[in-house]
Length: 290
Image (cartoon, rainbow, N blue to C red; front, side, top):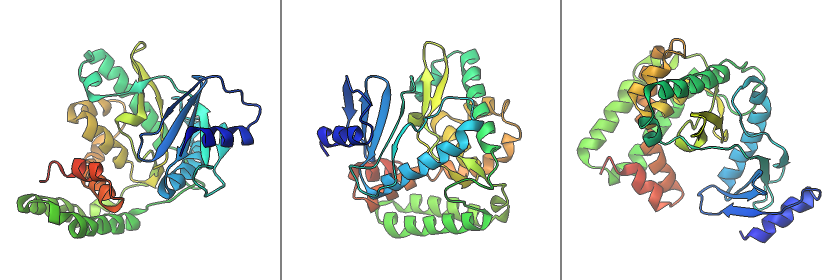
């Protein structure tokens, strides 16, 4: 899409919004992003899956924001009732900050690392404690979780094993089968989770040395809270998660499942690349297996 149709769409729905400055990023896989007046962020999905994710995100944010202390996107300008790409969008106030890169965390002093861990633990404790009864979006219960990971394993074998060397195939099989054969892994208490709790969605205020916000709730659903811990484990390592455990009660009970989930993230990225013919995602997801 070109920039002008997006702007025309926004002003047709919100004619009172005066636009003075425009910056846009059209290089993302899932969304074109417009920054208006250095104040607002507008996201336009690029494909049907991203559109569904955007619709889910608006519903989830409306439900969870009253429970969350850290800033999260506030749905202000919304047109998600349409399934027409180029017309569906979601606009929210800009949350200042940069992604919390592993290098930023590693280069911080122990007191600052502890403050970051406390910020993230507070967010996760609040999110995971939200009542799930009336939560929007999908719910992955214990039984559905088993079916989900079994089907994912089958997709990995069918779609990706031809790219993966034999010893790594065997390693992947052990990883999945050990997890699937232990029924204790499917006795978790479902909670509302972020679902994509990684570097790009955790915003950091370098001046204040604190987390400034959490964004992108498009993968949020009711499921295993260990998935959110897995995101931190994969991106920032065991030592940081150990620090987090000081502020997140009983986190050690989630760690065995979190380690399994973290070990599937590359394969999930590769599957995305395979299914959507995205060579970069396919190669990046498989780099430790070929």
